[in-house]
Image 1 (cartoon, helix red, strand yellow):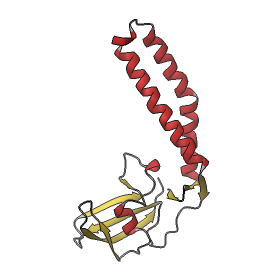
Image 2 (tube, helix red, strand yellow):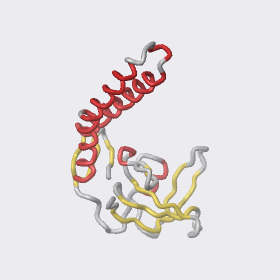
Image 3 (cartoon, helix red, strand yellow):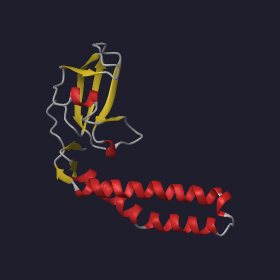
Image 4 (cartoon, helix red, strand yellow):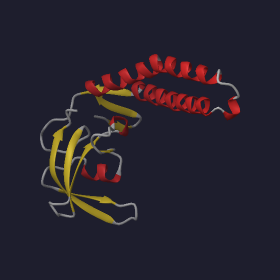
Length: 165
């Protein structure tokens, strides 16, 4: 659970440890693995028509980009406590909302930095229109945010609990 402001990213100790472990893996064993793949593909012959070589190089580029992102993120990170379970929406919380007052049309999401996104649960950044609209609101309150077309929409906060992973 993270909150980014003024180039500082707030992380719980758990989130910091998870991202640091990912960085250590990508900087060490993953680099070795990709170097082996590239070397094996190089030995297959003509590099201009070698799909395996080009795929391995592309994978290496994506991995190095992620290493740079994680390095920058962790350099500017501040470790803090998980948000309180006080019913106020804050980064690091699992939030349930109802669209336009229809309590049957709901969405549950994690309010956190995209760095903490997973495939298990949808994640909205605190800087996104919906994230900034619900941030700081209490359970039961309505929140308004701007849609991409410029129109306003409102949601009702149904639940807000600290995300435990």
